Length: 367
Ligand code: TRP
Image 1 (cartoon, rainbow, N blue to C red):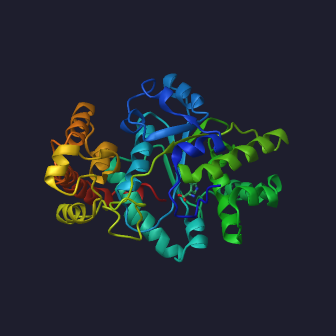
Image 2: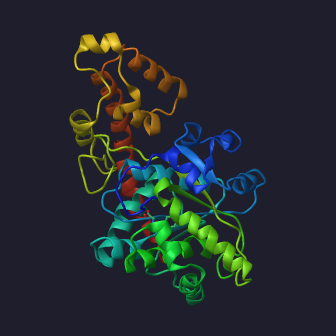
């Protein structure tokens, strides 16, 4: 069982069977190139064939995902942002949901504060990373739309979902339940399905890129969709999904907004980022230079290497060389960290400029 609200690290591959998730690798190379796909960071998928088909034949589809506003926007969040922007460039209609109802019920924050974090941290950084207002429907669970026909359709769907699930089914999926969890799940199912209502885009393929922790929600949503269709109440195509690995935190655990020593924020200055990497980034290097030269480092557990692999060294030949040189002991931890800090500094400086411009564009996303 996966607890979507828990903090434990889930071993990705192990869970693929349990949730009927299949390998993503077959699609890489068949659709426009993407680093996360090519490098296996997006490792799993469900029903992605439909989406690959839409991309190839330039057919309409929706990409929908959600965010929990939880503080600083960090490198882990960038993995989702990059996917959203990738699909938007391919012509997908983007549905981007701020899970403020979920965050309000599951965490200690006011709706007002959550709204501020969602806009100032998430939306602003998304825009700076390349999100465009055209074909992007950015919304809050607590305030779906200024159109009452749309808002009613979204909330009506939420109010009908309980009829399609049983308490035992929810318990089997989520373990311990609480009213907050139940209401969060009902919202998320509607988030994923409502683009197919006639008030929105009507029936059509939807892809939901998420981390593996969201797999339980996706499975439930597919079951609910099938039951609505079977009862002829709605006619839904079962949603597709992809699963990505998380960028690990600096010290090797989870990258979490609640622990500044675990993350590099996109608002960190190059100096702060450098200090964090030198001080906290878990090293796969050996205790002494002699030992390192002799045995070589372990890139697989080295966080600096992983940051390069996940996002900061997009050139496959170069990352391979770094891997080999580190593993053979040719480069030391300090040198590896130097390569990373230079790349991150360059990114953060450019990003800061883009973020300042992005602030003026926020209003184009929220009506
Ligand atoms: N539960 C998700 C999270 O914890 C947020 C979310 C809400 C979501 N609605 C969604 C994710 C719909 C994907 C699709 O991050």
